[in-house]
Length: 71
Image 1 (cartoon, rainbow, N blue to C red):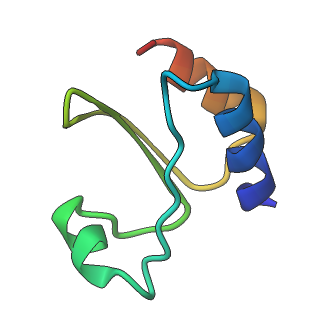
Image 2 (image 1 turned 45 degrees about the horizontal axis):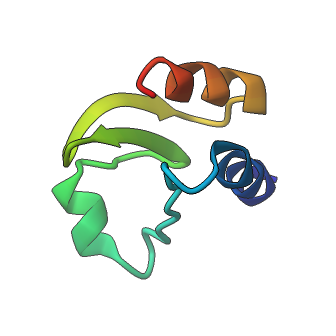
């Protein structure tokens, strides 16, 4: 379910912005680097810095709202 929402958000945002999915079981180093302790976690990055975070499942509309604040 979350993967489908992320894919839809990626398509909606076009080419300027990107949604990247990371499997924390396969890439624990990246999860540790960003202090991801719970999943799912949506980290919004701008200029290489985390500017917002959502933890736990949220509907697509809630995720869009957070993303749109930073576009």
